[in-house]
Length: 320
Ligand SMILES: [Zn+2]
Image: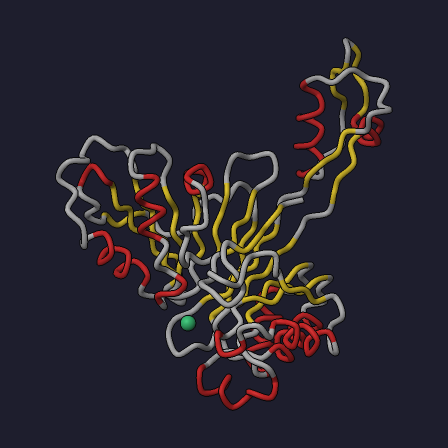
């Protein structure tokens, strides 16, 4: 199970912090104001999925870089068409003459519409970008899907799926050892012929597999700043397929549909329809318009008329 939480209240800048299980590592979906994060949390973030470059989704990058400037782990930034030049422009906006010994590198990845183009920006070279091989970075065996959204600027929605995880059964009569890791790898590969050495004896994989239970992967979709008309929803469903948890913007209420259309945002009703179409188990609404500040319950009620398992993370103070 992974854990995720909004960094800010639902009417403020989007930034969804995803903690990876068993790893001292966190990912961010969007990078709005990050002042609510501790230095420790900022240091653990190594990947940022940016939906688009509007300032409320992107302004936190400076705080992140400030925290990580002398780290030795790259910061990976994925985003839509144009993100590499915006990253270059952002990095060119500071003087870097006294930090040339830092090993820190920002790795940018841009979806051009056909390929993930990459450029690396090493601190030791004053963050001047160098083209890198195309393709996505390895994402700790998570799989990534993405879709282009309708927001008047290049904008991506993301879907992350965790790798299969395993639980070792405590009632197993054999002592733990390297055989467990080998068995898990063989289960992932689907090759269960042969034997493994367990406590000095060769035992068939087909017997050993009963002591390790495979847990189903988790899926998380993140969709924000888009119209969610039927055509756009159909494209998202085609790109993502069934997904357990959907984090979706619901900037407006259905009574404000005209406003949603003019601002290229969505309504709570549209978010709920998307959750139904993605066969979700849970819908988390966020990025509500400041025009509806204090009315989060209305968004919730509206969405629940269509999709009962809808929630809004309201534990954060609305006063900020
Ligand atoms: Zn936007």
